[in-house]
Amino acid sequence: MKPDSKKRVLLVNPKLKSVLVGLESSAVPFALLYLAAKLEQEHVVHLHDETVSPQNIGEVVREFKPDFVGISANFSFQFPRAVQIATEIKSYDKTIKTVVGGTHITSTRPDIILQKHSSLDFLIRGDGEIPLFNLVSGETPGQIEGLAYRANGAVEFNGIFFLDDLDKVPFPARHLVNPKDYSVPPIFYSDHHHTYFFTSRGCAFNCTFCAGAKERFRKRSVANVIEEMKLVYEQGYRYLLVGDPCFTTDVKRAEKLCDAMVKENVKLSWGCAARADVVNAQLLQKMSKAGCEYIFYGIESGSPHVLEKIKKKVTLDQMRDAVQMTKAAGMKNYGGVMVGYPFETEDDFKQTLNFSNSVGLDAIFFNIVTPLPGTELWDLTDHDEYDLETLEKILLYSGELSFWDQDLVKKCHNDIIRSFYYRPKIVFNLLMDLLTRGTLRRRFDLFKTLFLTNPLLNIENIKNTVFQSDS
Image 1: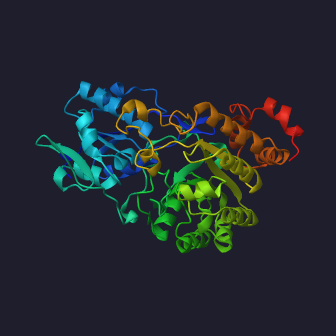
Image 2 (image 1 turned 90 degrees about the horizontal axis):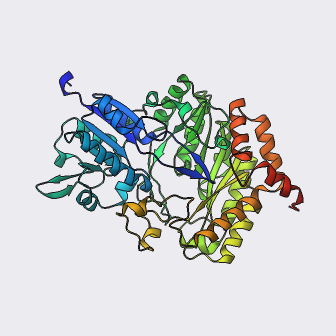
Image 3 (image 1 turned 30 degrees about the vertical axis):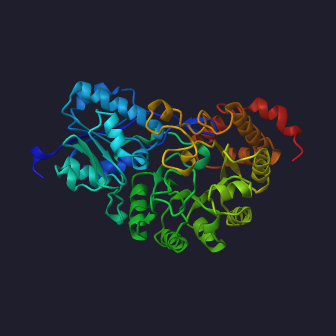
């Protein structure tokens, strides 16, 4: 590409609050790092993350002078801010082209969005690396799969683009971020030098609450994954937070990857998410041998009635077996539950509470059921997925769009957290984890998270209740 044809591309991650067990955390905007890696092959890229940067968007635009601005809307509650950013940018310079992509855009109708928001020039649905690169490089919009745009007074959109060969995607541009600017709950890592890592995209399952259920499962080759693992080790990282929706979707492939990690002497520890119906004892032993320290299981509910309704297609017995096999393999078990489904009863909730305490988890994470645009749960509501005020309320912990009364569902949250964590065995295990696992920085972060910043798990609450527990 000729020097004068290089474009300046600003990638923006809108500010947000990601809430997990009532705690704020910020995660590296990895989708933008993938976009940046592809764009950097021929263009100039700057990343602006509002969740960590003190600069306002106006200052960034005036300094960087972009030709294109790509804005992430991976979360629906980011979209209102994405529109604000695009509007601000157009007020500075109407010639700058604005592009928005992410899960929210993939899950909604691009024609309605572009009709409502004149500050948005383009939308990308599906995987963004190739469509955005082609757009910035000057390809005709009508030839770009996954792109939505205006033409002759109408909105045109070219379907959804999902890349089949993920090995063609460049490794994410980790050099554009400072890992120290970001935080995740320290229970998920044992070394402060950690990074997110993805070996696949999409999901092979169809849970009714998940906005990613419509994105089909695709996987990277084992060789490609190993190559990136060696690179991140050279870059100084020692712990991987594997962000695949389900690392074990393809059991044979997961086994081959773990075997390769051992054979290639990959010296990284890691953790991942999995489903209880796609693990077995042999795979779990291989994962442990390859450095896996924990598995996060989406429990969702302890009620068979609710599990059937949400199309989880996992039984309570399968969950119990998975937890026991994971423990036998030497890894920790973390689980997530949600409360507040429209068809959930008080008895269903009690079953969830009892199952959460009895299944053998080392830690539990709670969310209030919140309908997301593009999901079957959303279809049960009369909410408008194109109303910006409604989208701002889609915070998984807020309960503002809960099917239940907001006070009731928050009480249920407190009941689950207290009943799980206020047990001597759990407190002892957390304290041992605090004292023995990982770096001093990680231990401090874990202590702060568990006993200082979390109102449900502070020292006074535990001191006053835990030793009265009979479980």
